[in-house]
Image (cartoon, one colour):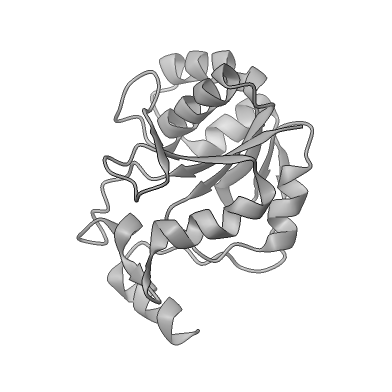
Amino acid sequence: MTILGAILAGGQSRRFGSDKAVADLGGQPMIVRVADALAPFVEGIVVCGHPAPPAGLIRVEDKPHPGLGPLGGLAGALFHARAHGYAGVLSVGCDTPILDADLLSCLGSAESAMSVTDAPIIGYWPTSLYDTLIAHLATDPRRSMRGWTAAIGANPIDSPRPIPNVNTPEDLALLLRSG
């Protein structure tokens, strides 16, 4: 089974104050750290929603149009995956640079939709869900990841460790201090 890795990076970084995807984390842009963590578990990686991903990463447009939050990015990834013969998408956020390998391995071996309980942006999504997601986006004005996972009955999985989420410069500083 071939899996496409999708880094969802279309947010506006309002709380961060600048583009957090390219914020320096130990000498690398945060998005590169995420791609490096994701790479062993997927056959290809795309970046969804970011206007200018780092060299070597393929940019995918949100579907059906920009401005739909993480679900628009996920729809873009599912569309791309289906068009290129992938069975599913393993999604992560650009602001979750510390990802547990066992968790990613579990998600990468899933056969049906599965998402992390405390971070539903991190999940596995079969490409067959694309049309369902497009219909969901057309009818649910909230566009919530939790709402989407509930609507499709995604299997919840707990992360074995807390997943750091970098939303502010203070979050990044704390992550850098904790090593």
